[in-house]
Image 1 (cartoon, rainbow, N blue to C red):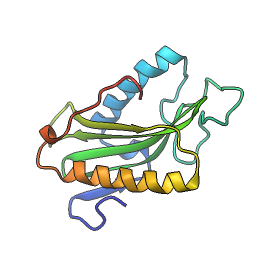
Image 2: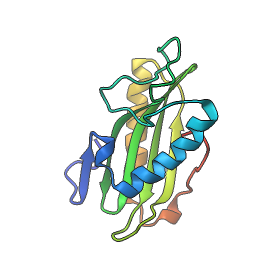
Image 3: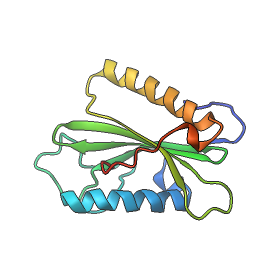
Length: 154
């Protein structure tokens, strides 16, 4: 868990619960990737929905290549954690944004990708690493403490 019990902390299990500005920014980024590689809609599957993971053979372009894992915010800092399937395996992504009140455009401050973990031991290490990293980013004094990785792999 990320910042359990902290005031101003809220966690979600649905992509739709993220701030509309965050969702719009992510969907824009996803569209660039999806157009390049021919994925269909939706851009993000729900936690328990079918999605285009690495085990879906043959590939189904009507399924999303992403599955929502979790998200939330701590004060004005928002985060999303999702999986991305592909022929080489499943990668894990966390993106963190600043979204102060009355702001229309979120500021991406952090995007990390952990590629292709498949073993249970690896997953436990990955989850611990990602939670510690996100907690650090969420509680940092300013976005300048981190550099956004606005790469094309979304």
